[in-house]
Length: 425
Image (cartoon, rainbow, N blue to C red; front, side):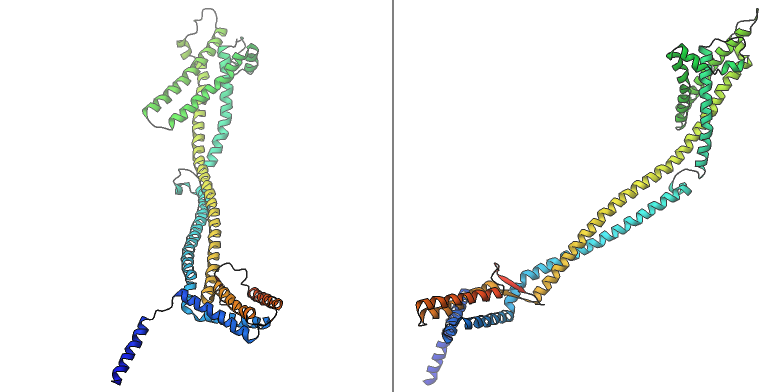
């Protein structure tokens, strides 16, 4: 019978334990509230509410709360979780920025190598143009200047020749003392043409440029091969020859008329073709014109070869300029990324110290310590037998002591939840 009673009692106890509800978070807060309040009442009662004792009690309360926070690993891990998450993000960002910095430095090295190669190409192209696909001769510069030195006096000669022969053929009146040479070259051609008017002067001044233009056209047509261009060249040479022949016919005819005697036949084309002076005048102009054209073509070709090298060098200079601009941009980006990396490293180091340290819940401590103060003041106001004025003064002293305690801990200006105590602290 006694055994049965014991079994029933045990089952009743187990049922009571099973049905007992665990305290909630809110209930735990209320427990802490009353615990700190009651502790304040008890310790205030023990020292009759002396504010000097309150200062020591608050310091002890803080250290106990601080040690409790350090011992609560699970709560600390929860508090540190945002910093751990941030640390992972910063480490990922640091890895990405480090890789970007490596790519930028590699790009910078490549750009610098390309600039050095471009500078070498500028030097090597002068000595070996064929290496760069340029059809040029190392002696092209010398040939160009020799050709140019020949072309200048030839141009002056042709200029003088066509001014003299044009004026002599179209406008000049010969006297009997004029010989063949005097008929072709007349020193006073420009002076006398200017006397007769601007049109006559302009005609004989600009007519040499017609032949220079014909020579330039011949050179341009020679650049492109083909039957059509060959036909054009032949026609241009024919026009030049015919014009020279006309000038020779006019001059030779005037000379013939001055020297002919009674009974001589009139000057004609058939007679001109048999006259040596006729051919002398033609070839004095046409042959020299052909020589001028050949020299001009040679000079232009050598200039084109030199121009290819010059254009090649200009293009390389432009490339170097662009590369230098790229280098400036890359260096600016490198500096920016390096600053970002330094900032990330500083923050990661800071997060390491935070995670290795502990987090102090400021608001929780201020809430509980204020409950402790209320308990302390409760004893003074409700149980301590002193006058009302002394009670007010004592309560104010306690409040000032509490405020000083919070200020010394540097907790009075914190508007956020937690204060971080790093590992080095």
